[in-house]
Length: 536
Image (cartoon, rainbow, N blue to C red; front, side, top):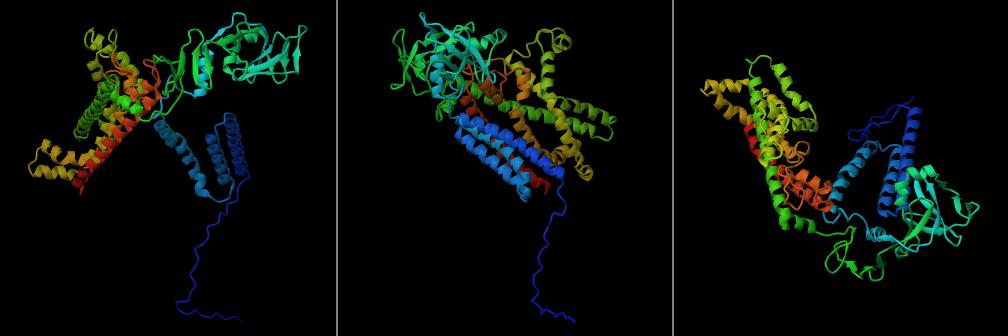
């Protein structure tokens, strides 16, 4: 027999929490799917690492390798369940949000843009290449055009019978194991595909623009071809002196030196193109506010952006609130039909509505001029002030359904007893609305009005699809127009063709926009705290 000894009070051992054990067996299919997905991810990542290794991008290579190792550790190791769910979201957040913001901020402090989008060595090679001319007494190099993975190469036989192979970024190097015809011309090389006459015809432009350097020294020139069968020597009219870091024009002796602005320039500040990307500090911000040709359009665009955002929020809110009050009245019939009808503009994409209104407001054959105004010649999109009215009307058409929806919901959440009490106290409809309903309504919709302001502050679709930011200010130093918002101005500075692409200046503008929107949002949300006292 066994007897249980009663435990003394206060000596009981604390009970351990039950351990959660995953009792569900792992399916073979699930394991195989996980292995297959990881294999695909690893294959793509290894290929990317190989490319980064060849391009000597060591920082990106190290980051990519660390991320790949982390992915395999998390998904191959048992446990770490939270990490399995968090890792994809964190990686996408880092790539598509954090990296974009940080990189844009970095670009704002560089001269990155047209003519300044690569390294100094790439700029030197490009200057030498673009200034090359054919040597009049150049010997003829017998040529066979090869292909390897879609990249063309030259297999040349020089006048002495020596055979070399090279590509656009690969100087000629001598080869000894090759195929040749009866005349001693090299016709093939192991690992390459010899292009036929039909291939040469179909890729004529690509091959004619190919320049194969003779050596690592760009002053030695390069070989080019026009017919795909013979190549000739081309030399640059600009001779580069690596020790002095200068270019000398062999025709007139002009010397071009590094001007410290990412380009080579002569004594008259005439620059050679292309240049290269350098860090310029706060020069882009100084340029934005220091040059009159940029400062004036920037300030005008900023003022219009604020006006557009305030007017858009005010007009859409006023119309949406008015319709919400009307169709919230119990005496109104057919409310469901009208509510559905009013939501339709909100259901159409903004860019599509912009294109439709672009046709409606056409000065010559638009519906508005021809039908509503009886054939009038009103320049809705070419006059600066009428263009602003046009974009406000389009935004009113697109924005009032949203305000109608949120105001309808907010009004229906206000108890009817408050209105009845106000009527008992002798308040009229306007007093009831102004003193009771509107303050309570703003408690709910004020944060949404602030977010609507931030949205309209960066309302790219309406401006770009209707007016393209025009009509353009021809005196501006940037591609700025009467209806441009800051966001469309940034887009046109970065990608427009009017004054060239300037990514550094555009990134500086983007930082300015971020600061302005952040300040306005902070002030706005602080002001909404005063409205919260009404609901207490």
